[in-house]
Amino acid sequence: MANPHEIPSYLKHDALGPWGVYLEQIDRVTPYLGNLARWVETLKRPKRVLIVDVPIERDDGSIAHFEGYRVQHNTSRGPGKGGVRFHQDVTLSEVMALSAWMTVKNAAVNVPYGGAKGGIRVDPKTLSQGELQRMTRRYTSEINIIIGPNKDIPAPDVNTNEQIMAWMMDTYSMNQGSTASGVVTGKPISLGGSLGRHEATGRGVFVVGCEAASRIGMDIKGARLAVQGFGNVGAVAARLFSEAGARVVAVQDHAGTITRPAGLNVMALQAHVAVHGSVTGFPGSEELAARDQFWGVECDILVPAALEQQINESNANRIQAKLILEGANGPTTPAADDMLRDRGVLVVPDVIANAGGVTVSYFEWVQDFSSYFWTEDEINLRLTRIMREAFASVWQLAEEKKVSLRTAAFIVGCTRVLQAREMRGLYP
Image (cartoon, rainbow, N blue to C red; front, side):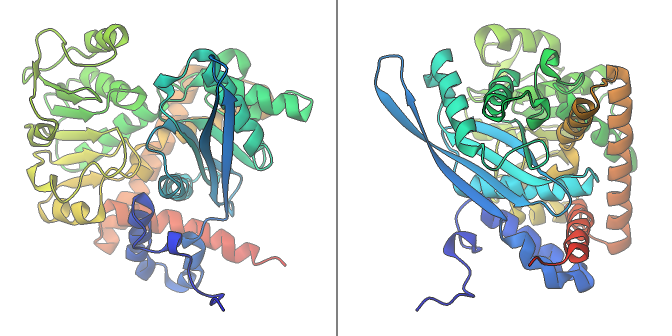
C-alpha cells in the first residue's frame, strides 16, 4: 500500500526542470523563517494543478490537440495571479515553478495576490490567427472552472499579448453571462486595460536597476548594458537605460546575437525587429558566431530577459557584468547563483526585478473594479514608489542577515505568505 505521507515524484527535488530549482531556493530560505518553518511544506506543494486537453479544428479541417495547464500555487494572501504563455517547450515543471515564483514575487512587493501561472505547449507561429483564437478560447473554457476576478486572474506572458487577453476575457464573460473585465489583466485599453501596463515590467527592471547601481557606486550614465531577449521586457528596459545614458552594447534574441561596443541605437533596433522579426542584420552591428559568446561580452549590467535557467554552471564564470537584473523568471540556477556571489557579482532576483508587470496588473484590476482609470503618469509614479520601497526593504534585510538579495527577497515574500497561512489556519 502506498505511503500517504510520501511526496509525489513530480514534487521532489530531483524532478527535472525549473520546479527543482524553486524547491532548492525554498530549502535555502527555510533556516531564516523561524517558527513559520513549520508551515514551509505549504510552499512546496501547489494548491491546485489543472491539466487540460485543448482540441481545435485547424483551417484545413483536421483536428489538433494541445496540452494546457493552469497551476494555482498559493492563495493565502489573495486570488491567484500570473501569466499565460504559449510556447513549444512549456512543461508542468515549468508552470509549477512559475506559479510558485509568482507567489513569492507578489508577497515580496506586497500586492494582495497569491501565485498562479498557465500555459499551452504550442509554437504559436505555426497557427493562423483564426486557429490561435480558437485555441485561446477553448483553453479559457477548459480552465473557466478555476479562474475569475476574485479567484485567479491570468495575464500576458511569453508569446501572449493584449489580443489573447481580450479573447480570454470575452470567452469567460460569455460563459458567465455578463462582462467580467477583471478576469484578466494586460487587456487592450478599450476593454478596461491600464495605461502603462505594456511597459511596466521593463520599467520595473530599470527602476530597481538604478536603485541597485546607486548602492554599489555604479553610474548608469556610460554603463555598458547587455540584454538577452528583446521582447516586451528586454526592449523596454534597454530603451529606458539608453535614455538614462547607458550604452546597450549587446542584444541576443531567438535568432542570434549582435554587438556594438559604442552602443546600439535602441529605438532603431526596435524598428528593425518590427520589420525583420529579429535583431540579426541590424546595420552597424557585428553578429557573434556562437550563441554562447553572448555571456562573455564586456559589460557592466546584464539583463537576462528570456527564459529560465539561462545562467548556469557552464557560463556563470564567463559573465563580465558586476550587476545582473533578472528580467526573466528563474534565469539563474542556484549553482550559478553561488558562483556569481563568490565573484562579487550582484544579482537582483526576478521576484523583485521583474515585479513591475504584476504591480501594474494590480493597478489594472483595481481600476476595473472601480471603473475609474488613472493617468499614465500616476501609474508610473505609483509603480516607481512600490518598486523602490520593495527593493529598499530587501536590500536592508540582505545587509542585516548577510545574505544574497535573492535569499532576502524570499525571506520577505515567504514570511508574508506563511504568516497569512498561519493566521488563516486550516479548514476544515
